[in-house]
Length: 123
Image 1 (tube, helix red, strand yellow):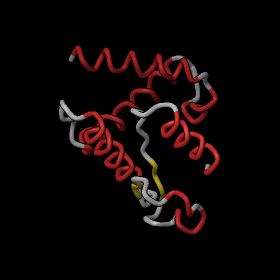
Image 2 (image 1 turned 30 degrees about the vertical axis):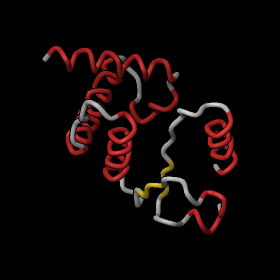
Image 3 (image 1 turned 135 degrees about the vertical axis):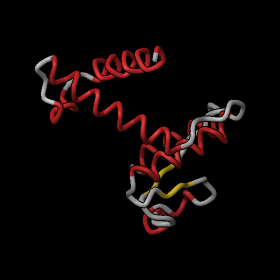
Image 4 (image 1 turned 180 degrees about the horizontal axis):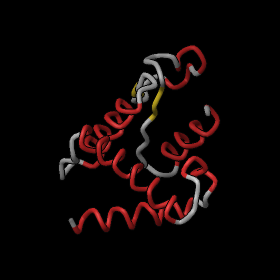
């Protein structure tokens, strides 16, 4: 998505000085093959590993937000997997196919997430 990334970086440079973005790449330095103008940006490699992706995003949020320390990435990963299990159960209870999860409206998925977080915080 070089075009979209360029637009985002342009907005940061010319319109939104406080805008932050995390650029994720499967392999470290792979971007140099395709996008030469991206040098100087903070790019994180996730090595096509979902756990590593969670770690990179968590660490970036800690750096950008400062202040309150986020949960360890291993805890976030475990919670994410717990959410997926519960979402599967909830969708089946509503006679929905969890394998078709990406076909439901995004707003409905957000509602599932909000409800799960609310219930999780009560425990």
